Image (cartoon, helix red, strand yellow):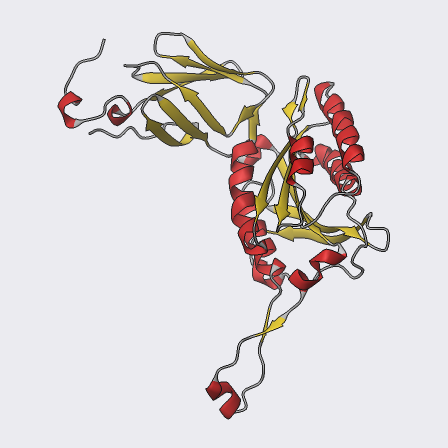
Amino acid sequence: MSHERPVEPFSDLHVEGNHVRAVLLHDPTVEGLDMAIYMDGSGSMTEEYQEKPKPRGLLDWWYGRPIEMLPNQVEPQVQWMLEYLATKDRNGILRVAYWACGQSGSEIEFVGELKGVDVKQYKFPGPRVLGNYTYLKPAMKDFVNYLKAQVPNGARQGCAVFVTDGVLFDADKVKAYSREIARDIAYGRLPRMNFILVGVGDAVDEEQMEDICHEEYPGVGHLWCHRIAEEINQVAELVAVLVDETMTVAAGGTIYDDRGNVLKIYEARLPAVLEFEIPEGARSFTLEVNGQRFTQPLPEEGEHHGDEDEDEDHH
């Protein structure tokens, strides 16, 4: 069975039956992507931000070894996300902040513009004042203002990750502000942006998340996507997958088969992960984007099932 390697601009190609999954290369210098991480700073996250003593064995007790403290559960997750997402960011530096902070639950506590290298040097003990409520709109506004300020520096699109463990108190305002943002994107007043909402634990209102994330906007499509993690230690991996799936590579594009038939049209945005069906016997597909055409040969195993068909000719 032969294997076709992905040609640029594709970084990965998977064909199963007639279904193709092609991943586009991420080139931050071309994409001009600015990323940010916002961690829930509300009171319900108290336990996740607390350091815990390392379990002690009999010998530790016998020899009087000092108690070692394990970092809070959030810290390694933010470090992991920061390291990974910095590879997607145009300059490898992410805006990191706590949200839902302060008595009102509507304050933002800025952590810093953090590099994706040497992430172990950064500590994430939680905000100084944990919030009594969970308001998301202020965090969205913080990112929009940040992205606007970065446009003169080369930002062409943005992606913000919001992690929460509870119910949003301002879901209606979040939806209204999302519509406002989408209008500004459609009219060219704002660069393209995506929001990723990750819920942690069983106190999250998934119905509320779906209501926010399933809305489509004219000329823009979806702004939001979401997932639920059962525990905080699953967050980083989920975020990595979601970012890859929602990354916008271009304003739009078209997929053709090797006979010139249109297989799929991406009108508002071309995501980094393309999934589509190909007709039986197709030898390749072509992506047209920004007036350029890129043809990717298809592997034989994508066309056949069984060794007896491997030498059969196709027409």
